[in-house]
Length: 408
Image (cartoon, rainbow, N blue to C red):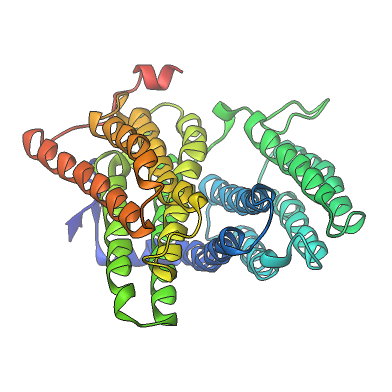
């Protein structure tokens, strides 16, 4: 028997088995997203290595696809945090998201090419299917929330399908899909307002805050695992001595990000969300915060994969933006997480961000391996700072309800 969390709860072996029986669908979904994130990373590597006159449109397309996957995962996490995941209809929702996400990942490299129709139709089917299942399952007594979400999904489906069918392999597809994705994100943030039906305000969401926080934690583990997978696959392509050092640096960087994320704020996030009167509000903030953290981890992994391919040669200054920008975005998101939980930000995070920015002009002319090693050194300094602070202040709790963070 062991104690879990900071509220005195105890988890027996039988209780652990019960937890797994209720969440095996979510664990399977997470495995699908390991594949999806790997496909996104591979596409980003192609964006940065293929000879093109203009790279930014390619990067923008990849960012758009990443946002589509992130929204799909987040909405599934909200459903399982609002309803009992063992119920048949909720499991059906998970299967729908699972299969649809796999198809989206398969078509992802050519989503802006000849597989755009399949990608768009699959995405729309997921967004329309979830509220339909909830309506048929009668999970909302007033049945208004699923109807609102269904209305917004139907509206955003128009530019999604139009972009895939009417403008094949055209930059206009990106414009239409960006509009569709903006509608999807706006609907989630505003509570899907519909004339005559109102909207579902954040404070009205009946969420299991602790469960939602654990889902965010799990996704960060997925992103970290994907970087390890990408490092291993890249190193395995050519198992040569010159790739040993960049592979070790990549693995060490992943471990440092794991340490930094879960140091206090990341570890106590479930208790922090559960302790406040309105878990859904903090859950909304973490929707944006963890998007930044996850993107930073993916970009860092891509930067290391590029260096493993070319450990000595200096290929492209744009690589430095990924090599240093990934850790910087991770630290920025992690700083916001710390502020959300403790209503303050450690000086080590700020110093780390300033160090990465200051070193960028120096590293732009040096081999990329030096840049990745430098970023790893900065992260190691932050981790060491955290360890020293933990020894001086062994106990630190999240901000109590009613603090500045919760009044925003």
